[in-house]
Amino acid sequence: MMKMKYTRLKIRALKKYFSTKYRILNYSSDSIWTGLHVLGLLCVVILFLFSIYLLNISNESGPNCYLDEYWKDGKTLNEISDNLLLRNSSQPNNVFFHETSCIKDGMLRLNARQACAIESAALMNPDHNIFVMFTSQVGFRNLSSLPIIDALLSYPNVHLNYLNITKYAENTPLEDWILTNKLFESQYLISHTSDVLRFLSLFKFGGTYLDLDIVMLKSLNNQKPHNFAAAESHIAVAVGIIHMEGKTGHEIAEMCLNDLKKNFNGKNWSNNGPYVLTRVLYEICRTKDIQQMIDKDICTNFRVLPIEDCYDIGWSELHKFFKPEYLNETLGRISDALMTHVWNKDSARIPLSKEANVAYIHLAKKYCPRTLEACDHF
Ligand SMILES: *[C@@H]1O[C@H](CO)[C@@H](O)[C@H](O)[C@H]1NC(C)=O
Ligand SMILES: *[C@@H]1O[C@H](CO)[C@@H](O)[C@H](O)[C@H]1NC(C)=O
Ligand SMILES: *[C@@H]1O[C@H](CO)[C@@H](O)[C@H](O)[C@H]1NC(C)=O
Ligand SMILES: *[C@@H]1O[C@H](CO)[C@@H](O)[C@H](O)[C@H]1NC(C)=O
Ligand SMILES: *[C@@H]1O[C@H](CO)[C@@H](O)[C@H](O)[C@H]1NC(C)=O
Image 1 (spheres, rainbow, N blue to C red):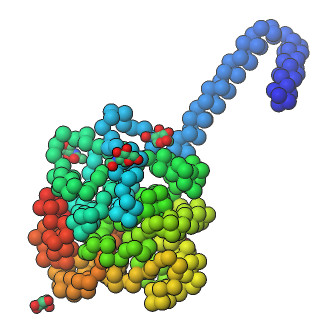
Image 2: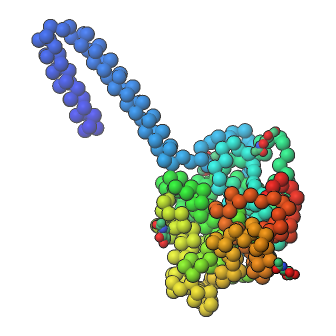
């Protein structure tokens, strides 16, 4: 109110100033006022253009490729919260995969290696429901056949859904945080979204989260009923596989969400995944020594599996999945493991023929046979 009053007074003063000034110069007051109106209009136009420019800038720094509504044709996969199976299923038997790519053409697609991770989980855990959730609005929009998707859907326990992030965060510790857009302004949007969603899924429903660049080699039932994750090195517990169930699992997932909210950093790739869980484990294991967490089983309601169980072939050795000379060594080393991680961030560009005599293809033949059959190249 005060401000408006002040502005009106200012305008009145201005009018007075101009009319006296220009009367002296013998201009007709009318034409001066027309001039001022034109000037005002110009200002409005400039302000308008400037605000459009500002809006564009903020779109560049934080595009929300997931929620900007592109598709209103009713063909997007059903939203996950409508999936009664998830709501009703018994907690420990949920398995979550999150595909967080920005898919603007609305086509449902998974590459062969992603599908292999999903199929291996479905094959080794027939008593589990495997939920594959896409953060982009994908659906069956292409009339051509999708052999890889068909291969996956031939498993009755595989379920594909769309996941609306804002909706997913409702009634969780991240409900308000998600609206701050910090996530959508991340420099590693795809990875960080997947970091956020894995902890959200475990908090909301309980079950097992798996990365899309793994191969599951055993049934998850081998490790249950404990909450668990596996060490990747002596500095961090990794988050490519995390199992949390029941009341204790829910509480640990909540600690992870609170840590994530407090320490989120969109410029640090690893800060919001492995380090979230590692920081929480420092607390519940009362040590920062990862080896002690593994050897002594000292973490309250949580088990840290040894490196060999899931990440025996580490990032620095990822070539061993792709080169024939390491076939024996690689298969030998993981023969007792629960799963293996293939480090997609750095291995995605290594091409592989379906006939290559390498560890990854050998694993595919055994753990994701239908995907291998359906794909053109692996
Ligand atoms: C899930 O539970 C609701 C009631 O809570 C029930 O109406 C519905 O039929 C159940 N759905 C399935 C798939 O079991
Ligand atoms: C969609 O279908 C066309 C042919 O009908 C095909 O060329 C194209 O690759 C398909 N796109 C995807 C994403 O599958
Ligand atoms: C996502 O969910 C939010 C909150 O429920 C809703 O406002 C929005 O329209 C949804 N977006 C899409 C693309 O479904
Ligand atoms: C990222 O975060 C982790 C954990 O907070 C930290 O150890 C690491 O140094 C950070 N990396 C960079 C490049 O800042
Ligand atoms: C690979 O291992 C098999 C048995 O596990 C053995 O028969 C074969 O000789 C080994 N090959 C090489 C090249 O080491």
